[in-house]
Length: 270
Image 1 (cartoon, rainbow, N blue to C red):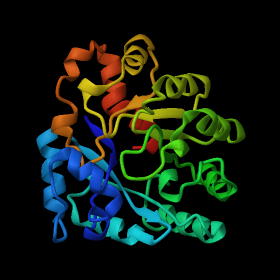
Image 2: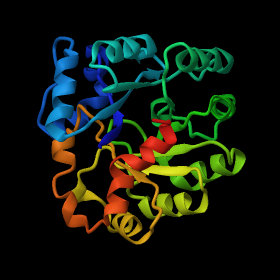
Image 3: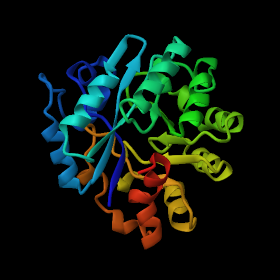
Image 4: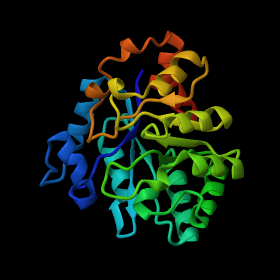
């Protein structure tokens, strides 16, 4: 079984946003002019052998780029069990954000919260995040975020694992935190934080197997209970491309299973 921990089924307003210009340039693609059918996303999952994809909403200072209700609609349009929703919220009004998160989990069946700090140019230690962290603990869902440098045209400072992820994990030891995008160029910091805190995980979205930093590969191959999970950052990268060369990492069967599905099953309660 393969679970993709970081996907988007983007709206046109999200995919055409100027902040993503650098990503489209790197991939040699252009953003779509019309809304993309769900069949396209499911087809890309099939081609890469992905059984379940976690697709998220996107909220930023300008509002909803992909709303929670749109994500719920995408999940409903897909074959049963193929897509699962991850909520996002507007952090400027923390209590409204908490109520929206509750609605997404209790009524829409979403499996986690994702807030991307660089979109707000605020680190995850900002006071506006803390009510959401407490609610994630109460709801029993993970907080998914981005670590490492920022590919889109925004500052990268908010993606530092130390001090930000380390401090959040100290303040909320019960909170499950998933740091997406590996943490490069601070991958060694991210691995250290992951080893230090039992509820901190890493996902590999936005990176192909062949671009995994050596310190991440060492962690996955040498630690019998590594906490790394697979992600693509689709549609910027497909699973078929991301997983090419996986057998060359030298993972044991146990480590490979944890990477492709086991860790995600655990934290998303699948």
